[in-house]
Length: 484
Image (cartoon, rainbow, N blue to C red; front, side, top):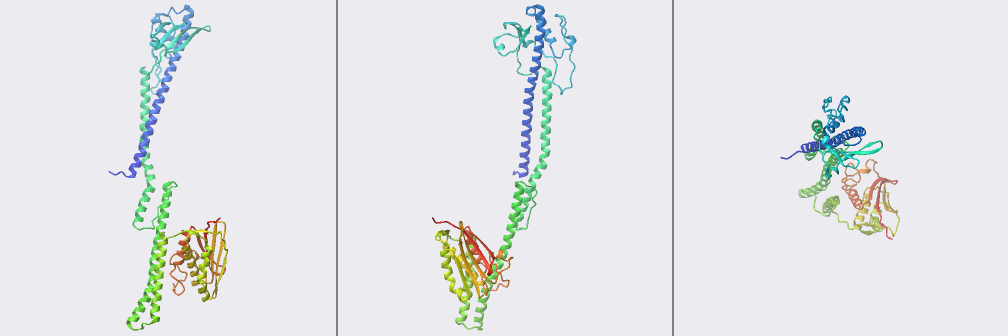
């Protein structure tokens, strides 16, 4: 049988309550037994002190202890006279008075400790001033070592000693009855505590399991593909934080699902256009509308190149997303890579009627732990993006600044620009500013997404802003590794 977490939690709380209640019971029982024994001992010592006072009076009248030696009736009468429950009018009297005291008034049971007289005679021993046995319990040496001694004094001088043999357990019927009553009370209190814990365990268990049940239901809905699922956050503890994390996960999955749908739609759109052109060209050739020739072959070849470029970009972006791109990091100076990349674009920039402005802070100590091929791909994509989207006559400005811990690389171009709302989306895959998605003015919208992945792989940052030249300003920051 598999136990649910509800049963386990309920059993844990109940077992804990039972253990605490049982421990509380045994502690109270131990504390009461110890305290009651001390109470009984203190009562006996008070009786012993009263007996010592009475013996002092007899000793003063008789002039020694001969009067009580072997006089057991008188010795027993003294015990009864010093009992804490004997009425005052019955104490004292003639030495041979053997009348038993009347029973003391009873206290309400279970409220006060028993006050019935105890027969301490067999446990009280009288010694003279030289500690020689006079009368009382057995005087052997083994018992003497455990006696509780009280000195008997007269006019400032010690005239004898009273010894009390200590008891190890309760034997008086009144004491035992009182202890039994208190034990029953402790048992009743323990049972009430366990019952109250049992009643409280149900709502506590339900309260603790409520967010867990919500998480379980929400997880099942996520498994079924309902990514709009959200669960209420009702507590501020770990379960509440877990519920909040669940909602963040659900929101992330919902966003990823939307992006996946857009991704599929955009890829389909990007691939449909070159395929449609190729199909149209081939069908025109088949129908005889167009004749095979260099221009027709060149057009078909151009669409194939375009299609190949889209597939390659998609492959590179996918590989960079899953971390499969092979980054061979070495110490490189980014200025040298940037200069080499700019030289490759100078002719194309000039042919389009654009002016390329460079402001490079060459620092031989500037060093990055980076992949030079990926950095060249990063710079090439950014220059290609500016070249493609900048209207002639226009400007492209490249700037490199070296700081203490970072190297900043900036790419700016002139109009046309983009709106502030579009700037954060420039690095989204397959996103292009023009709504018509006219392929004559742009590519597949993957270049900047690849750039972002390359910068992230180098622990850097890349952002887009409006350029003072009227176009887009791409800001890149990469961590330095100084060469001493």
